[in-house]
Each structure stands twice: as C-alpha cells, then as structure tokens.
Length: 296
Image (cartoon, rainbow, N blue to C red; front, top):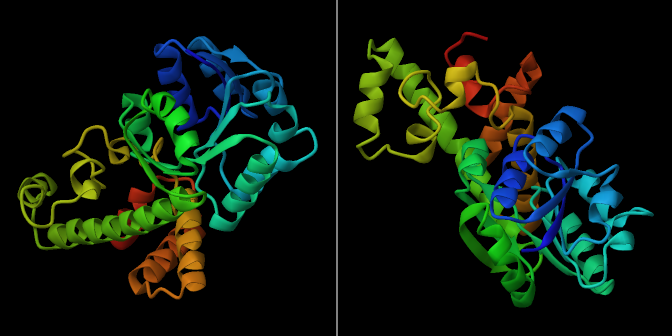
C-alpha cells in the first residue's frame, strides 16, 4: 500500500478517495471546500492544511481539479507540487484540461524528475462511487505501470492512450460524443412525448433497439426509467452543464488546432452555451432536455 496525497475531493474526487481508502491506502486529502474535506476525513482520510501539505512526503499525488488554471497553479506555482513532492513520487491528475497545459505540466514534472500521468476519467459520479471508471492515460510506459495498480482501485478500465496529453485527447473526443448523444437522446424523448408516447415505454423500446446508448441506458435524461440518473434528483449531483460546456470548448479548440471537422460538436457547444446562459450551468448536463422541451 502507498501513501497518497489527494487534492480535490469533491463530487468526483471524494468517491475516488474513498475507494483508495477501502483498498487500504493511506490518504491525505485537501479541498478548498470545508464540507468536501470533512466528508473525506469522515471516510478515513487525514486532513491536509493545503495542497502543498497534501503532496509533501507522499508516495503518490493525485489531483482532481476543475480547469487548466487550477492544474497549472497547483503544480507549477511557487510552493506547488513540483517543489514540495518527495523525490521519485508518482504524480497523477484526472482533470480534463487543454492538451497544451497538460504537456507543459508533464514536461516540467519530467524535468524535475517525477513520473507524471494525465488520467482523465469517464463514468460520472456513479462510476466514481462504484469504482468502475474508465481512465484514459497519457504518459510513459513506466509511469503507467506504477500508476495502474492505484487506478485499478478506482476504475474498471485503465488504458494508456499514448504519450503525455493523449489521455486528454481521448477525453475530449469521448465527451464531445457524449454531449452529442445526450442531445439526441433528449430530442427523442421530447419528440416521443409530443407524439403521445410514455417515457417508460419509449425507454423500453429504444434501450433494446439500434438507438441504444450510454446516455439512454445509464444516464437517462427523464425521470423514472433509470432510478440512479440525475433526472430523478432534479438534475443535481451529476456532471454540471458548466463542466460539459468546458469540455466541448476544449474539443472545439483541439479540432481547430488539428484541422478536424466537427459540425455536431460545434452545434452541441452552442446548445449547451444557450442552456448555461439561461441560468442552468449548475444543473446536470442531461437537464438540457428541459430546454429542448421548451420548458425553459
């Protein structure tokens, strides 16, 4: 078992930290949210007074932070992880950020003598709770080999996609597809309702037909058919629209940089931008069904 500094123990980081604790790892946690940190401590983690305190002296440091500026800051700023982590520590971050920032931090970590892995995830809060996440990793073979046993306590599928930044590239492709499929699923339910179909009946048909997808069968955007989906909690406690919009913007920036054509990805970004602008950035991204129904 290894000692782990875990920075960012909110909706996604909290369940991941709990699964590390269940596996017997020693976890020192930090979060700017006192409530999130309290929950981690109640699960068995030790409270750190700062990100630097969480990172100092541990065998592995895992960060789960919202955006590029947070990742750059916690690793690169004076007194950041690269300046306080012990020699030879393994550094893993699971945020979804831009590929250039990822490669900048990875290069700085490598120069400082650390093994560094970008490891964004898919599977949502439910997957984090169940320990069934998919980790999309970028980094060296050696770093991946060291990280894999740790990641396997939090996820079911662990894939090395390539060198530094490859995990982020895979994640933005995945989330662009997720956003597109969710919009399509929402439109299908909205149309079915207008045509007089009951949501459960339509779900029963589509979930075993050619329209079947994760957005339908695992994360159904209407209440009822999938009791664990955020639709049954007023579209709270899942993957916030603001975060999906961030990922869509990252995907479009990557597409522009690579010269790729992604018209549906661009349209998905516009629709989620409109949904967020209506004041719903904090709702789960499946809540866009309400806008497509004309309820908002």
